[in-house]
Amino acid sequence: YLAEQGIVNLALESPKIYRLTEQQIEKIIKGLARVLAKVGVISQVSQKVKLNSDIPIYKRKYVRSDSNGLFEPKKELMTEVKAGEIVGLITSLENLTFTEVKSPESGKLIMIRSNSLVSSGDKLFCLGLT
Image 1 (tube, rainbow, N blue to C red):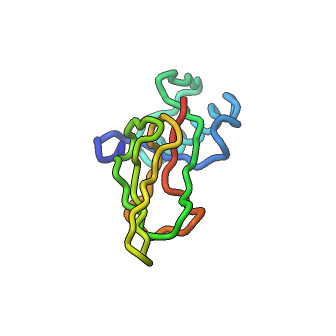
Image 2 (cartoon, helix red, strand yellow):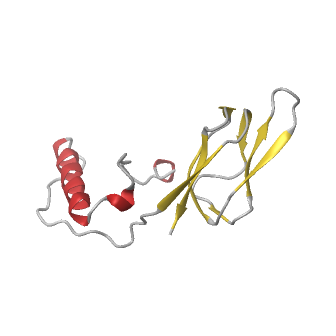
């Protein structure tokens, strides 16, 4: 999403973000800055790290499939959704019936599966909750 907007960004896979301490986050930022400096994306690494309070940190709620079929998203990544709003459809391959997949609560779609076959228990989307 950010790359499509022309914004330089990095994604970081980590344990649940709300379990990271501020010191751990600062260490991660310093390490990423050293990598970016090494490959020439930035010119130097500042010794002082200041966390930008504008960076959103979300609690996450994963929504999983309760059936098998073809998942078709109906919302875009980073869209705000309300509780009960339809986020996608699952089409059963056995009888071609549709099941609406609704958001269990309000939040921002920070991950959503593309059109693909899903099985019961597969992650369909993730809500960012503030």
